[in-house]
Amino acid sequence: MGVPARTLGGTAADAVGLEALVRLLAGRGVVVLSGAGLSTESGIPDYRGETGSRRRGSPMTYQEFTGGEAARRRYWARSHVGWRTIARAEPNAGHRAVEQLRRSGHVSAVITQNVDGLHRAAGTRTAVELHGGLHRVVCLGCRRGSSREELDRRLEALNAGFRAGSARVNPDGDAELPQALVDGFRVAPCTACGGVLKPDVVFFGETVPKPRVQRCYELVDAAQALVVLGSSLTVMSGLRFVRHAARAGTPVVIVNQGATRGDDLAEARVGLPLGAVLTEVARQVRAGSPSA
Ligand SMILES: [Zn+2]
Image 1 (cartoon, rainbow, N blue to C red):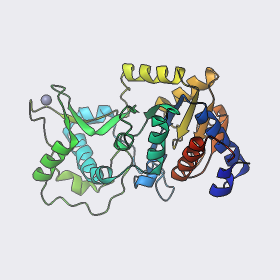
Image 2: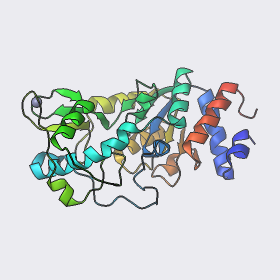
Image 3: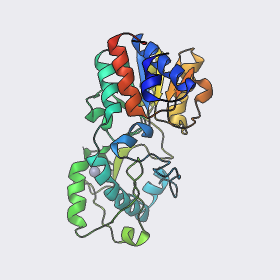
Image 4: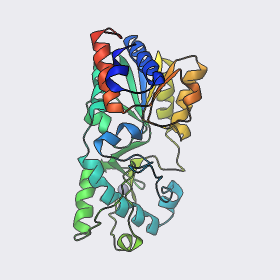
Protein backbone atom coordinates (compact mmCIF):
# COMPACT_ATOMS: atom_id res chain seq x y z
CA MET A 1 0.00 0.00 0.00
CA GLY A 2 1.34 3.45 -0.92
CA VAL A 3 1.98 6.42 1.29
CA PRO A 4 -1.20 8.38 0.43
CA ALA A 5 -3.51 5.97 2.18
CA ARG A 6 -1.51 6.33 5.38
CA THR A 7 -0.94 10.09 5.29
CA LEU A 8 -4.32 11.16 3.92
CA GLY A 9 -6.59 8.61 5.49
CA GLY A 10 -9.56 7.47 3.45
CA THR A 11 -10.97 4.13 2.45
CA ALA A 12 -9.38 1.20 0.66
CA ALA A 13 -11.02 2.49 -2.54
CA ASP A 14 -9.36 5.90 -1.99
CA ALA A 15 -5.99 4.16 -1.65
CA VAL A 16 -6.54 2.27 -4.92
CA GLY A 17 -7.57 5.54 -6.58
CA LEU A 18 -4.50 7.38 -5.32
CA GLU A 19 -2.21 4.68 -6.62
CA ALA A 20 -3.95 4.80 -10.00
CA LEU A 21 -3.51 8.59 -10.08
CA VAL A 22 0.21 8.39 -9.35
CA ARG A 23 0.69 5.59 -11.90
CA LEU A 24 -1.23 7.38 -14.67
CA LEU A 25 0.49 10.72 -14.02
CA ALA A 26 3.89 9.04 -14.03
CA GLY A 27 2.99 7.77 -17.51
CA ARG A 28 2.50 11.42 -18.60
CA GLY A 29 0.01 12.85 -21.07
CA VAL A 30 -2.81 13.21 -18.54
CA VAL A 31 -5.62 15.66 -19.28
CA VAL A 32 -7.29 17.30 -16.28
CA LEU A 33 -10.97 18.27 -16.25
CA SER A 34 -11.68 20.46 -13.23
CA GLY A 35 -14.86 21.73 -11.62
CA ALA A 36 -16.14 23.82 -8.72
CA GLY A 37 -14.82 21.40 -6.10
CA LEU A 38 -11.25 22.40 -6.96
CA SER A 39 -11.94 26.01 -5.95
CA THR A 40 -13.71 25.45 -2.63
CA GLU A 41 -10.36 25.57 -0.81
CA SER A 42 -9.94 29.04 -2.33
CA GLY A 43 -13.06 30.20 -0.51
CA ILE A 44 -15.51 29.81 -3.41
CA PRO A 45 -18.29 27.51 -2.21
CA ASP A 46 -19.41 24.88 -4.72
CA TYR A 47 -23.02 24.48 -5.75
CA ARG A 48 -23.76 22.25 -2.82
CA GLY A 49 -22.47 24.98 -0.51
CA GLU A 50 -20.70 24.71 2.80
CA THR A 51 -23.74 23.25 4.44
CA GLY A 52 -24.39 20.74 1.69
CA SER A 53 -27.57 22.49 0.62
CA ARG A 54 -28.22 23.08 -3.05
CA ARG A 55 -28.30 26.64 -4.34
CA ARG A 56 -31.61 28.40 -4.02
CA GLY A 57 -33.29 29.34 -7.25
CA SER A 58 -32.00 28.48 -10.68
CA PRO A 59 -29.20 30.32 -12.48
CA MET A 60 -30.15 32.90 -15.06
CA THR A 61 -30.46 31.62 -18.60
CA TYR A 62 -29.12 33.31 -21.70
CA GLN A 63 -32.69 33.82 -22.91
CA GLU A 64 -33.67 35.64 -19.70
CA PHE A 65 -30.53 37.76 -19.75
CA THR A 66 -30.95 38.91 -23.33
CA GLY A 67 -34.73 39.13 -22.99
CA GLY A 68 -35.09 42.07 -20.64
CA GLU A 69 -33.59 44.88 -18.64
CA ALA A 70 -34.97 43.65 -15.32
CA ALA A 71 -33.20 40.30 -15.72
CA ARG A 72 -29.93 42.04 -16.60
CA ARG A 73 -30.25 44.33 -13.59
CA ARG A 74 -30.77 41.26 -11.41
CA TYR A 75 -27.77 39.53 -12.95
CA TRP A 76 -25.37 42.45 -12.59
CA ALA A 77 -26.49 43.41 -9.07
CA ARG A 78 -25.92 39.86 -7.84
CA SER A 79 -22.74 39.47 -9.84
CA HIS A 80 -21.42 42.80 -8.56
CA VAL A 81 -21.60 41.39 -5.05
CA GLY A 82 -20.32 37.95 -6.04
CA TRP A 83 -17.37 39.44 -7.90
CA ARG A 84 -15.86 40.58 -4.57
CA THR A 85 -15.47 36.89 -3.61
CA ILE A 86 -14.18 35.80 -7.02
CA ALA A 87 -11.73 38.70 -7.39
CA ARG A 88 -10.07 38.18 -4.04
CA ALA A 89 -9.84 34.38 -4.34
CA GLU A 90 -6.37 32.96 -4.83
CA PRO A 91 -5.27 29.64 -6.29
CA ASN A 92 -4.99 26.89 -3.69
CA ALA A 93 -2.67 23.90 -3.25
CA GLY A 94 -4.74 21.95 -5.80
CA HIS A 95 -4.34 24.53 -8.59
CA ARG A 96 -0.64 24.82 -7.76
CA ALA A 97 -0.07 21.05 -7.86
CA VAL A 98 -1.81 20.83 -11.25
CA GLU A 99 0.45 23.58 -12.59
CA GLN A 100 3.52 21.84 -11.17
CA LEU A 101 2.49 18.59 -12.89
CA ARG A 102 1.88 20.47 -16.13
CA ARG A 103 5.32 22.05 -16.04
CA SER A 104 6.94 18.70 -15.43
CA GLY A 105 5.04 17.27 -18.43
CA HIS A 106 2.88 14.86 -16.46
CA VAL A 107 -0.27 16.84 -17.19
CA SER A 108 -0.58 17.65 -20.90
CA ALA A 109 -3.63 19.92 -20.73
CA VAL A 110 -6.18 21.41 -18.37
CA ILE A 111 -9.85 21.86 -19.23
CA THR A 112 -11.87 23.67 -16.58
CA GLN A 113 -15.58 24.16 -16.08
CA ASN A 114 -14.77 26.96 -13.64
CA VAL A 115 -15.16 30.63 -14.55
CA ASP A 116 -13.07 31.90 -11.61
CA GLY A 117 -9.77 32.16 -13.50
CA LEU A 118 -7.84 30.38 -10.74
CA HIS A 119 -5.96 27.95 -13.02
CA ARG A 120 -4.64 30.94 -14.95
CA ALA A 121 -3.80 32.73 -11.74
CA ALA A 122 -1.78 29.66 -10.73
CA GLY A 123 0.20 29.99 -13.97
CA THR A 124 -1.74 27.56 -16.17
CA ARG A 125 -2.21 30.08 -18.99
CA THR A 126 -3.16 27.35 -21.44
CA ALA A 127 -6.12 26.10 -19.40
CA VAL A 128 -9.16 25.81 -21.65
CA GLU A 129 -11.97 27.66 -19.90
CA LEU A 130 -14.89 25.60 -21.17
CA HIS A 131 -17.52 27.99 -19.81
CA GLY A 132 -15.51 31.18 -20.27
CA GLY A 133 -14.26 33.51 -17.55
CA LEU A 134 -15.75 36.14 -15.24
CA HIS A 135 -12.64 38.29 -15.69
CA ARG A 136 -13.74 39.29 -19.15
CA VAL A 137 -16.79 41.15 -20.39
CA VAL A 138 -18.16 41.23 -23.92
CA CYS A 139 -20.59 43.63 -25.61
CA LEU A 140 -23.52 41.87 -27.30
CA GLY A 141 -23.80 44.84 -29.69
CA CYS A 142 -20.31 45.51 -31.06
CA ARG A 143 -18.63 42.34 -29.63
CA ARG A 144 -15.92 44.49 -28.06
CA GLY A 145 -14.19 42.70 -25.19
CA SER A 146 -13.10 44.47 -22.02
CA SER A 147 -11.92 43.65 -18.54
CA ARG A 148 -14.14 43.00 -15.57
CA GLU A 149 -11.92 45.28 -13.47
CA GLU A 150 -12.82 48.19 -15.73
CA LEU A 151 -16.54 47.41 -15.56
CA ASP A 152 -16.30 46.93 -11.82
CA ARG A 153 -14.96 50.46 -11.39
CA ARG A 154 -17.86 51.84 -13.45
CA LEU A 155 -20.45 49.82 -11.51
CA GLU A 156 -18.92 50.99 -8.22
CA ALA A 157 -19.21 54.62 -9.36
CA LEU A 158 -22.80 54.18 -10.56
CA ASN A 159 -23.86 52.41 -7.39
CA ALA A 160 -22.18 54.35 -4.61
CA GLY A 161 -23.65 53.29 -1.31
CA PHE A 162 -24.85 49.92 -2.63
CA ARG A 163 -24.30 47.54 0.29
CA ALA A 164 -25.26 43.92 0.26
CA GLY A 165 -24.07 42.74 3.64
CA SER A 166 -23.37 39.04 3.67
CA ALA A 167 -24.66 37.08 0.72
CA ARG A 168 -24.20 33.48 -0.34
CA VAL A 169 -22.02 33.36 -3.43
CA ASN A 170 -22.16 30.62 -6.06
CA PRO A 171 -19.13 29.50 -8.12
CA ASP A 172 -20.46 31.41 -11.13
CA GLY A 173 -20.11 34.63 -9.12
CA ASP A 174 -23.83 34.92 -8.51
CA ALA A 175 -24.66 36.18 -5.01
CA GLU A 176 -28.08 35.63 -3.50
CA LEU A 177 -29.65 39.06 -2.86
CA PRO A 178 -33.09 40.30 -1.78
CA GLN A 179 -35.07 41.75 -4.68
CA ALA A 180 -35.30 45.18 -2.98
CA LEU A 181 -31.54 45.58 -3.31
CA VAL A 182 -31.60 44.43 -6.92
CA ASP A 183 -34.27 46.98 -7.85
CA GLY A 184 -32.08 49.96 -7.06
CA PHE A 185 -29.04 48.73 -8.97
CA ARG A 186 -27.76 50.65 -11.98
CA VAL A 187 -26.30 48.70 -14.91
CA ALA A 188 -23.48 50.01 -17.13
CA PRO A 189 -23.77 49.91 -20.93
CA CYS A 190 -20.91 49.40 -23.42
CA THR A 191 -18.72 52.52 -23.56
CA ALA A 192 -18.20 52.09 -27.31
CA CYS A 193 -21.77 51.55 -28.58
CA GLY A 194 -24.13 51.73 -25.61
CA GLY A 195 -24.97 48.04 -26.08
CA VAL A 196 -25.62 45.32 -23.53
CA LEU A 197 -22.61 44.00 -21.61
CA LYS A 198 -22.45 40.33 -20.74
CA PRO A 199 -19.80 38.47 -18.78
CA ASP A 200 -17.70 36.32 -21.11
CA VAL A 201 -19.18 33.15 -19.64
CA VAL A 202 -21.46 30.52 -21.12
CA PHE A 203 -24.89 30.90 -19.55
CA PHE A 204 -27.38 28.09 -19.11
CA GLY A 205 -29.34 27.86 -22.35
CA GLU A 206 -26.29 28.90 -24.33
CA THR A 207 -23.92 26.49 -26.06
CA VAL A 208 -20.16 26.34 -25.62
CA PRO A 209 -18.54 27.68 -28.83
CA LYS A 210 -17.92 24.76 -31.23
CA PRO A 211 -14.19 25.39 -31.77
CA ARG A 212 -13.68 25.28 -27.99
CA VAL A 213 -15.54 21.97 -27.70
CA GLN A 214 -13.58 20.60 -30.66
CA ARG A 215 -10.31 21.63 -29.01
CA CYS A 216 -11.30 19.74 -25.86
CA TYR A 217 -12.17 16.59 -27.81
CA GLU A 218 -8.76 16.77 -29.47
CA LEU A 219 -7.04 17.11 -26.10
CA VAL A 220 -8.98 14.16 -24.72
CA ASP A 221 -8.26 12.09 -27.85
CA ALA A 222 -4.54 12.70 -27.39
CA ALA A 223 -4.64 11.95 -23.66
CA GLN A 224 -3.20 8.86 -21.99
CA ALA A 225 -5.73 9.34 -19.20
CA LEU A 226 -8.44 11.76 -18.08
CA VAL A 227 -8.49 12.91 -14.47
CA VAL A 228 -11.59 14.69 -13.16
CA LEU A 229 -10.93 17.05 -10.24
CA GLY A 230 -13.81 18.36 -8.13
CA SER A 231 -16.78 17.96 -10.40
CA SER A 232 -19.95 15.97 -9.90
CA LEU A 233 -20.31 16.06 -13.71
CA THR A 234 -23.93 17.12 -13.44
CA VAL A 235 -23.84 19.09 -16.70
CA MET A 236 -23.35 17.41 -20.04
CA SER A 237 -20.74 19.95 -21.18
CA GLY A 238 -18.19 18.23 -18.94
CA LEU A 239 -19.64 14.72 -18.74
CA ARG A 240 -19.40 14.27 -22.53
CA PHE A 241 -15.60 14.32 -22.35
CA VAL A 242 -15.61 11.62 -19.69
CA ARG A 243 -17.94 9.50 -21.84
CA HIS A 244 -15.76 10.17 -24.88
CA ALA A 245 -12.61 9.06 -23.05
CA ALA A 246 -14.28 5.95 -21.64
CA ARG A 247 -15.59 4.95 -25.07
CA ALA A 248 -12.06 5.22 -26.47
CA GLY A 249 -10.71 3.02 -23.68
CA THR A 250 -8.80 5.93 -22.09
CA PRO A 251 -8.59 5.44 -18.32
CA VAL A 252 -10.63 7.88 -16.24
CA VAL A 253 -9.95 8.66 -12.57
CA ILE A 254 -12.29 10.90 -10.59
CA VAL A 255 -11.26 12.86 -7.50
CA ASN A 256 -14.38 14.32 -5.95
CA GLN A 257 -15.95 14.39 -2.51
CA GLY A 258 -19.31 12.85 -3.29
CA ALA A 259 -20.84 10.78 -6.07
CA THR A 260 -20.61 11.91 -9.69
CA ARG A 261 -22.46 11.10 -12.90
CA GLY A 262 -19.22 9.64 -14.28
CA ASP A 263 -18.56 7.13 -11.51
CA ASP A 264 -19.57 4.11 -13.62
CA LEU A 265 -17.07 5.15 -16.28
CA ALA A 266 -14.11 5.63 -13.95
CA GLU A 267 -11.46 3.01 -13.35
CA ALA A 268 -10.86 4.50 -9.90
CA ARG A 269 -12.25 7.16 -7.56
CA VAL A 270 -10.85 9.22 -4.71
CA GLY A 271 -13.20 10.96 -2.28
CA LEU A 272 -10.65 13.01 -0.32
CA PRO A 273 -9.93 16.79 -0.19
CA LEU A 274 -8.30 17.93 -3.43
CA GLY A 275 -5.55 20.18 -2.09
CA ALA A 276 -4.08 17.42 0.07
CA VAL A 277 -4.56 14.70 -2.57
CA LEU A 278 -2.92 16.67 -5.37
CA THR A 279 -0.03 17.88 -3.24
CA GLU A 280 0.71 14.31 -2.17
CA VAL A 281 0.27 12.87 -5.65
CA ALA A 282 2.57 15.54 -7.14
CA ARG A 283 5.16 14.74 -4.49
CA GLN A 284 5.05 11.04 -5.29
CA VAL A 285 5.17 11.57 -9.03
CA ARG A 286 8.20 13.82 -8.51
CA ALA A 287 9.84 11.20 -6.35
CA GLY A 288 9.22 8.76 -9.19
CA SER A 289 8.15 6.03 -6.88
CA PRO A 290 4.49 5.30 -6.14
CA SER A 291 5.29 3.38 -2.99
CA ALA A 292 8.35 5.27 -1.74
ZN1 LIG B 1 -20.56 47.74 -27.74
